[in-house]
Length: 134
Image (cartoon, rainbow, N blue to C red):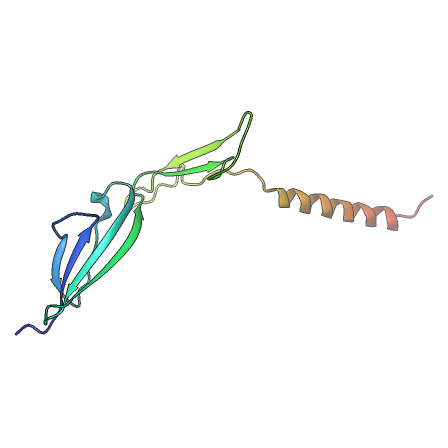
């Protein structure tokens, strides 16, 4: 008699399992065969007595080029002309990494400008304070 649990692995609402294995198991899910977007990994376990356990794990596949956008965020309220900086780049494959285009250029954050202005003001204060006047 088999004393191990049987594990059925499903992706999304597919009626045929991706794999049917005995526990414990190490399994590699090839996401290159899935379309980009939201998916659900459903794992059904049956113990030797016939009882079932189900676990659903939602996940997002992004095998396509990554898209970075600066100038607008999700659910922003905007009006007028909107300057956007958009970058899309691929990750290459598992053996080589694409360097060209993989870094997204960004504008300098406002807190950096505030820090520069504050430091410059502090430096000017001490410069004028300690320089002897004629």
